[in-house]
Amino acid sequence: MQRTSPSTSLAALEGRAVSAWFGSHKVLDRVSLTMPAGAVTALIGPSGCGKSTFLRILNRMHELVPSAALAGEVLLDGEDIYAPSRRLIDARREIGMVFQKPNPFPAMSIYDNVVAGLKLTGKRVSRSEKDGLVESCLSRAGLWKEVKDRLRQPGGGLSGGQQQRLCIARSLAVMPRVLLMDEPCSALDPTSTRRIEETIGELKSEVTIVIVTHNMQQAARVSDFCAFFLAEQGTPGHIVEAGPTTAIFETPQDARTSDYVHGRFG
Ligand SMILES: Nc1ncnc2c1ncn2[C@@H]1O[C@H](COP(=O)(O)OP(=O)(O)OP(=O)(O)O)[C@@H](O)[C@H]1O
Image (cartoon, rainbow, N blue to C red; front, side):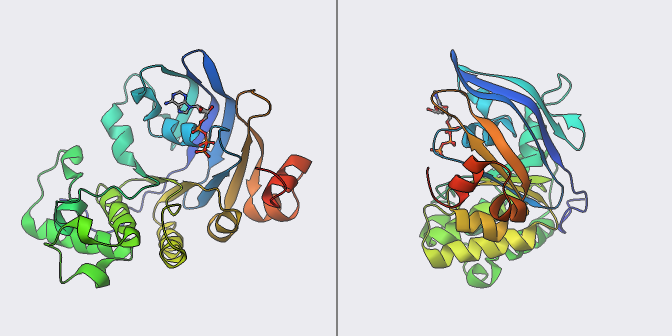
């Protein structure tokens, strides 16, 4: 039976010695990072240091780029998502992604947008189960009250912030264990941004979250852990420092971390 309540099975994600290339251009060098279960980890650093590439490696999207290559391991709850026995589709279902620009199916109804990913699960779902799932996912994404009376209207008719929360609801419908978010608020106004940040805070007890953000205030507000990436003078991106967000912001060990989080470069 389709579960309509939040998953209880929280999982940590761990990158071990992850390196990445586009053709012969190496963009990440042996990045290791644990993203603890039930917490928000923020990936921060200047443009081009490999944050999005690392994020896309975490759910096997990097391999979609024809020239892309990678080395290392990504462990979900201790199991390598790149192991030959693991299917790509399972990694995508267990590790969801929300993108910078909200990307609902614009002509599809709000209801159908939420359940659009269900075919990934391969399970047959009854109408009443779908109804329950739609309500549960929209509620958890903080959108139910605003759309419950217009579920049959197109997703493209919502505001940008509502569309992003619809995309979060769509991701939640396949019961992911991890939600990756690539600058999810960069296309949104401050009020919508705050609303998404609240949603992140509400979701982290049920799904592990990894977020890329350029906004240091946002990283400080929403994350429990932070990893500071840097690619110096054409060298591949690497992690300078990672740890609890309070330590990264208040007592960084590396002067480059301090300079970056205090807005002195990048
Ligand atoms: N599809 C691609 N093909 C070739 N090179 C790429 C591709 N995507 C990214 N790169 C390169 O990989 C490096 C890392 O890019 P990436 O987007 O991961 O950095 P980022 O830290 O997320 O940057 P930003 O903060 O600007 O989004 C950059 O040098 C970039 O030019």
